[in-house]
Amino acid sequence: MKKLIVSPSPHDENYIKTSTIMLNVIIALLPALAVGCYIFGMRALLLTAVCVTSCVVFEFCCRKLMKRDNTIGDLSAVVTGVILAMNLPVTLPFWMAVVGSFVAIVIVKQLFGGIGQNFANPAITARIVLMLSFPTAMTNWVVPFFYKDGIDAVTGPTPLVSGDASYMDLFLGKVGGCLGETCALALLIGGLYLAARRIISLAAPVGFIGALALLSFIAGDDPLYAILSGGVFLGAFFMATDYATTPITTKGKIVFGLGCGIITFIIRHFGSYPEGVSFSILLMNVLTPYIEQVTRTKIFGAKEDKQQ
Image (tube, rainbow, N blue to C red):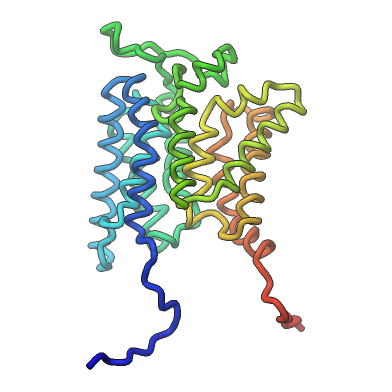
């Protein structure tokens, strides 16, 4: 005889697990990672492995010290490690990558309660901390395919600094930059894969890219060059769509994306930094609770209590 079990809603157990979501994100990142290894050599894969391993180890140790259930099985630490690596120059010393992983997992994620509790994107915050702490190492950009000449590295400017890269080189990633942000095609494939799997909404990426393109056009810049260069596609598809640090509502996602595009344009056009994607997403992460409060759906027929 079956027992009648009474429990609060929801009663549908056919939900997507966190590990499934993270696995799809990893799959979506593989094209950009593969292109990064092809353009910058096998050190790109080694740097990614260092970031992933250190993120997983830090999460495991941190959860043990806090006497909480371990969460390395949800693959969120792996995703953080991959995204962090893709935001780093391929020549960055491995110990600096470990420092970045510590900041991302221990300080930004676990000290705030773990997955879903952090107010800022761990990988972005770690990149900014590394950028401010080790500016020389974090701006050491190498030219594509330098390893084929049998030399350690040849540095060169990024497209945002030089401004002379072709559209095709930008689209295919044959330019200097972070190991995972150069190939717009690979990032676009990954982003569309996540959208097709309904892992992410395209509201924030479209708002982000559209706002940056429009403002660049109004300012007299090349809008296509602006969106293909730098970390726009990586930020728009993989960091401005983070569940924990971005709005839940569709209106909120649009506002978030527009804000990222506007701030990125302001930093690029008027600031001292050539790139502003990381700073824009971090600033919008801070504003996410207020965006959700303004854009939240009102219950039909309900009236809010007026505060005295």
